[in-house]
Length: 335
Image (cartoon, rainbow, N blue to C red; front, side, top):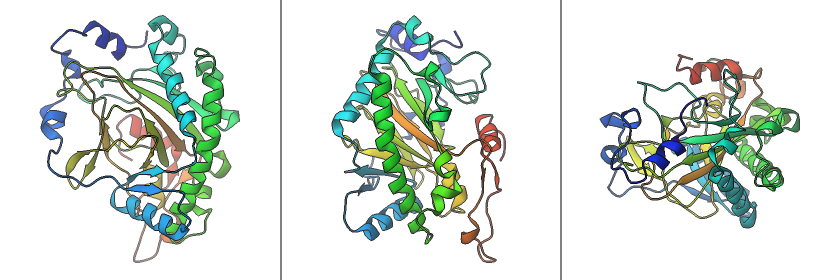
């Protein structure tokens, strides 16, 4: 076993009043101390079905500039499909531990795919209250079914159907991002890989935690993706940093949460902001989320779009291969 699974730790602590020291965050990170309790604005919600495309584009661009995150409703993914996706993921995490371990990320693997407990290097030796399953869902040439559970039996069918709808949503969003920057409709998607863009699905599983005031499911970070499109279960926990305050994301049933990732911030030369976010945990219930990270191929070079640069607006970021950016980010090295 790569590392002790958090789900196993949580099961052993069901009646405990404390958690192991390596899960206790420093005071400046503890949710009980740092979550803003006053009146706070809601993350923008955007109706993707509105016939007035200009107003949708404006709303998306404004949310990306001011927040780096927004929720979308009427996005076209059937509600029952989201329910089936969530039921399949929950089924997997409810399996006996040894059955889940059959999908474990191989020791020493450079890939992020598989069942595991951490993705990047931990800071200060602290652990996060989270297990996950990671696998690519698109393009077909990148998919490795070795990491797709066969239990439940409908797992593959549901995930492939969800991916089909997800790609349609992503194309609408990339179009809005392009037009919001004053560019051609296809400019952003073409600059991040076009049809070679990779879709990586992660299922986050945050078990019930005896001391949610001390732990974090995921510590504060921005995503290294272009955008991340996420559907959560009904247990709240996502928080975003807005104006120096950690505020809770309101749960909207069947909405998709869209994060601006680092590659879109770089591409837009800082016009669109990658959102700093974290996940808290719950004492009574398991929180789960299904983010899909949309990422360029490893060898793809991402830098500020030339159309957005001028003597008055020079590049703020270096152009580099996505694999090099990812290596630096996951190993906490400067870019």
